[in-house]
Length: 167
Image (cartoon, rainbow, N blue to C red):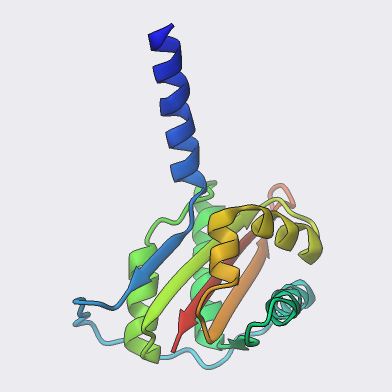
């Protein structure tokens, strides 16, 4: 009985860890690499619709709208491409992305939501809002965001990376 309970708790802990979102802060961190700001990003319709829905939700709960930053969308796209190439859904290298955004844009804090296999902006936003960690990022103390939504050409599934920053 105790072994079954222990296994159940361990499984729950693993699932919670895998579904959590990432956050990073600039406190006591320095980055010594030279970085260049990406100024151009071509948004597709679903990316723009998802950003608008996130801003509509924020306004509906009394929060500020977030301003999009092309550099953050580019970093999001890099992560989508990584996930597609490696057939994974994870936050790998989030620290490098957040450090890049802190160094390049002067961000004070950075967080990230990811998702996989949602077909519409409404469905991914609904899922993110149903998850406490993702919702915390959407409703967080941020000023800017970037997003990339890319389709895996092999199976048609969409990968989402949404980065938030306080600048």
